[in-house]
Amino acid sequence: MKGKIHQQSISFRSNKKGDWSNQASYSKDGKLPSDYPMRIIWKKGFIRLIFVAGILWMLLILLVLLFHIWSCQSSYVFFSAICNKESKVYVILHAWGFVAQQHRCPIPVANDPDKIVIPEGRTPDKTVKNLSYIMEDEPVKNGSQSPLFGGHQSWVQRNESFKLNSSMKVHCGFMRNGGAEMEPMDTKHVRKCKFVIASGIFDGYDVPHQPSNISDRSKKLFCFLMVVDEASLAFIEQNSTVREDNNGGRWVGIWRVILLKHPPFDEPRRNGKVPKILTHRLFPQAQYSIWIDGKMELIVDPLLILERYLWRGKNTFAIAQHKHHRSIYEEADANKRRKRYARPLIDLHMRIYRYEGMEPWSVKKGVVSDVPEGAVIIREHTAINNLFSCLWFNEVNLFTPRDQLSFGYVVYRLQGAFKFFMFPNCEYNSLFVLHPHTREHSSKVEWVKSLSEFRGNGSSMKESRGGLGLWTPYPGDLNSVALPPVVRSSKAG
Image (cartoon, rainbow, N blue to C red; front, side):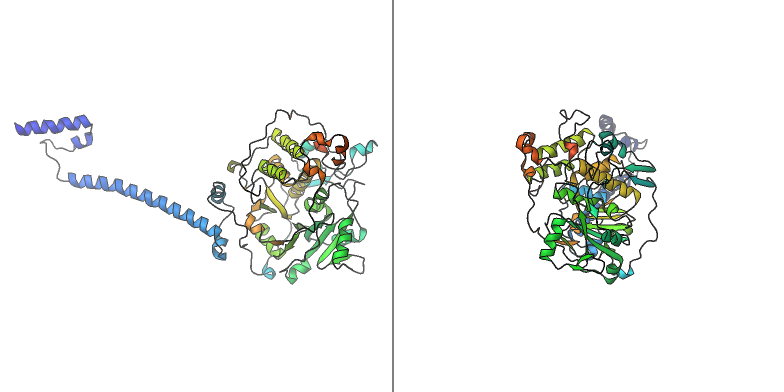
C-alpha cells in the first residue's frame, strides 16, 4: 500500500510540473531504466558544453578585437602593416571611441622605389568616357558682365552637371579671359609632365620646401611644379635662391616655379584651389598627380606613395580622413569657431546642402567619412576623377572657399559612381613635415557674424569674383531648413 501511494505521489508531482520527459522515463512497472542516470549526465553535459563553447567563442572574438585594436595602435611596423584601418570593423570601433586616433603611424610602403612596377596604360573609363569643358562664359556673350574664371553657372546648369552620362560638358574653371594664365615657357614645360608633384603658394604665405628621401628614379620621372601668383613669386625671390634655366624657366631647388598671372579671385585661399583641385586642367598631359599644400615638406618617395595608395589597391583617387570630423556639419561648426570664413555664409552654404538632402555622416553611408584632410590628394586623371574635380571646384567657386565642406556633398550627388580610397589620418601625417606659414592669413570677412554687416560700408567685404552662389537667390525655401545638431567631440573643433 505504501508503495502504491509513493508511486502515485511521484506521478502527481510529475504531472504538476509538466515534466513529461521524466514521466516517460519510467517503465511499466514504475522503475527507472538502468541507463537513466547516464542520460541525465549526457543531457546536462551537452548543455554545459554548448554554454562553455559559447563563452569561449565570445572570448575568442573579444581577443581578436583587442588584438586588432592593439595592432592598429602599435608602433611596430609589422603589426601596424597587417592592421586594416579601412575595414568596417575598424571604422565602427573608431566611431564608438574604442580606437584612438594616432597623430602619426608607420606607412606600409614598399621598400625600394626602383622595384616598383608602374602599371601600363590607363585605367579604363566606364561611366564617363568623354569629358569636355565649357570655355565661354554665357552672360559675357550678351555683353552684360565681365568674364569670370569659374563662369556664371546657373542653378539649373549646376543640377544638370551631377547627372552622369557617357559624354558630358561641364563648367571647370578657365573661362576665356577669366584669369589664371600661364606663361608660354611654363605651358611648354608642363606638356612633357606625365607624373606630377604639384603644390602652390599664394599671397606670399610660404616659401617652397625641398622634399627629402626622393629616389633618383622619381627625380627623373616626376615634374615638381610649384604654382604661384605674382605676389608670392616676388616674396620667394626675396627669401629663396631662384635660378633661371636657358629657356627662362624659374627653379627653386627641385621645384619648377609656375607663375599664374591675373589671379581669378579676390580671396587668396580661393585662388589656391585652382592648382589644388583643377590639377588636370593646369597640367592636361599628366596621368598621375600628387598634390601637397605649400606649407608641407614631402618626406616619402612619390613612387612609393602611388604604389601604396593607388596601384596596390587598384584605386584611382586617394585622400586622407579628417582627424576630428566625419560630418560636414561638424566641420562647418569648427570653421565658424576658428573664424575661417563669415559665419552666416557658412550657415547658408550648409542650409543649401541640407535642403538638397545631404545627411550627417553615419556608418550606414558606406564611406569612411564625408570630410577629408585635403592637404594631400593622390589621383590618376581618369574621366570620372576629372569630372569629380570639376564639380568639387564648382562648389568651391559658388559657395565658401572651404573645400572640405564640399567634398562629401559632391560624393553624395554622384551616388556611388565616384570611388575613392580614404586612408587613415595618422598615415597622412607621416607623409610630410609641416612648416608654419610665414604669416597668418586674416581678412575682415572671417569675423563677420551677421549678414547685416555686409550692408553699407561692409559691402566691400563681399567677393566680386567668387562665392556668388551665396548672393544669388536660391530656387528653394531655405528659411524652413534646420541644420543638424553638432556634438563637439574635440578641442580642435
